[in-house]
Length: 75
Image (cartoon, rainbow, N blue to C red; front, side, top):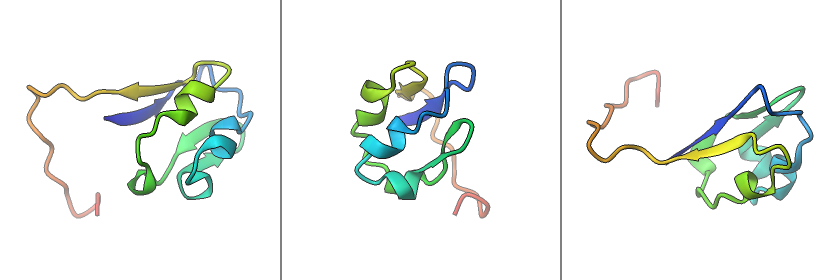
């Protein structure tokens, strides 16, 4: 699973950061929300359920899709 933010819907209200148990480590909210450091994310989905605009999507990866190898840039 992963988090995606629909930039068209996001208003930058910051509720995702306020509600997230790891907020300051994960969310950067200026004019739009960005999930910037997902290694701290527990995928609790609180951010998606609290977003008043429905801008945060929890995407379930297709189990039939091959796993991507981490590259040096990913680490």
